[in-house]
Amino acid sequence: MTLPPVFDAHLHVQPWHMLHPAVHERLWHGRPDAETILAMARDPGRLLRFLDDEGIETAVLVNYVSPEVMGFTEEANAWIVRYVRGHEDRLIAVGSVHPRTSRDPEGDVERLAAAGIRMLKLHPPHQLVRANEYLDGLESQRRIYAAAAALDLPLLVHTGTSIFPGARNRYADPMPLDDVAVDFPSLRIVLAHGGRPLYMDTCFFLLRRHANIWMDLSGIPPRALLEYFPKLESVAAKVLWGTDWPAPGVPSPRRNAEVFWSLPLTEESKRRILRDNARAFFRLEAR
Ligand SMILES: [Zn+2]
Image (cartoon, rainbow, N blue to C red; front, side, top):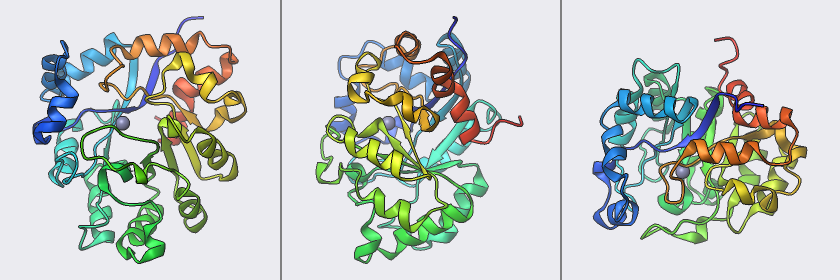
């Protein structure tokens, strides 16, 4: 049983030069591979060689606008679109429209989709916004969700806590997505990180309740995965593999995939999670 080609549905190649100094320090200080990672963000060819070495066939490159906490401005969207150009068969660009600053929510969503963004990211603890704040008057958020649903542009949502300086963890609980899933039944939602480390039960509940909710495994140590989700096998059709590389604690995506491959799940479920589910989710089946 050799490891199939991997679809990593959650890793980060971002305009790192935009990071606030404190976040930059938190992310890169003392990391021997920092220079290599920064160089990959300047050169897609270098990233593709790294993905080859790590056994990754397709990668979702997660970006989002987070001016307050991280330092990423709207320019991050244009940056990732330029980065993946010519490599769209292997690199999937993720961007975001910030509901607090967008003046033209429908137009912004449509422009991103037309430019080549294939999924929107919402990061509540870094964007300082609750996923269901449209119920309390944040009208632009409702319009972003409606526009994304109309274009079949899925929504990736960070679930669980964040320890970056400035992150606010009152936004970490994924339960507000219950409203989003009910109010926008045609919007496909991915729960990133399975709510780790505090909200795994909530994620599992949402996954089972809603046909339009999926989950990615990024940021969960694969060795502990079945402690986090003992019934993972029962939801394997809605689970996407991801590593969150280059997050601290993920030195090698290949190593993570190998540990996952050794877990006591059926081979069929492992193949689906590592590759097939994501290919279907991103409509790559016919390609
Ligand atoms: Zn991430």
